[in-house]
Length: 110
Length: 116
Image (tube, rainbow over all chains, first blue to last red):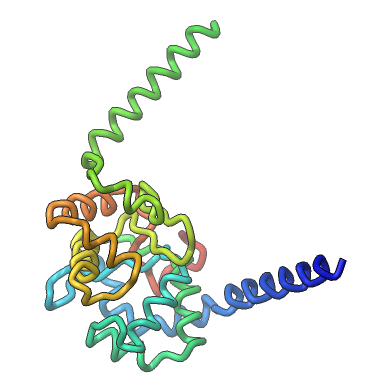
């Protein structure tokens, strides 16, 4: 019986963490915070200068992946001078908001 | 409509759809099965921690795979997978995912909320 109770407690704690992690981002706030990013990511077929490749399309991307990517740029683990500079200015909340915005962002029709 | 006729019409429609889908998409890359385990055969990831690749820019996917392969971009899973890919595999995979029905798109900061 004791084991069952601990099991339920652990399950509840896990579910709470999962809920908190997902509820974090505010898409409306993220839209404002994404303003700087549109200079590259809001222009269809925009090129990264060197090496040359098209900047990734971020609309519809999974929020958890965007959070991981921005944190890697911020820490420098993933190296890209422009993205490191941009991500360095973002707080955890900023990153969560931007990720929430991107996951459900309106699509640019060109 | 008679049952058999219905079946024939449905089968013909199915064939037509399969043929048109085949005409648009590139041939399945040999190494697709490796990527599909997490990113889905059509580039729709099986878990939110993994990125969707459907509709992503081919040149960006190529860049990412080369960066994983060289170790410039570090990720235990991707480093191991990309290490087994040739330049030709990378080209084929990037072309495949970029041409799947798009999950990834350019966001519109001025667009109406919920318009996607």
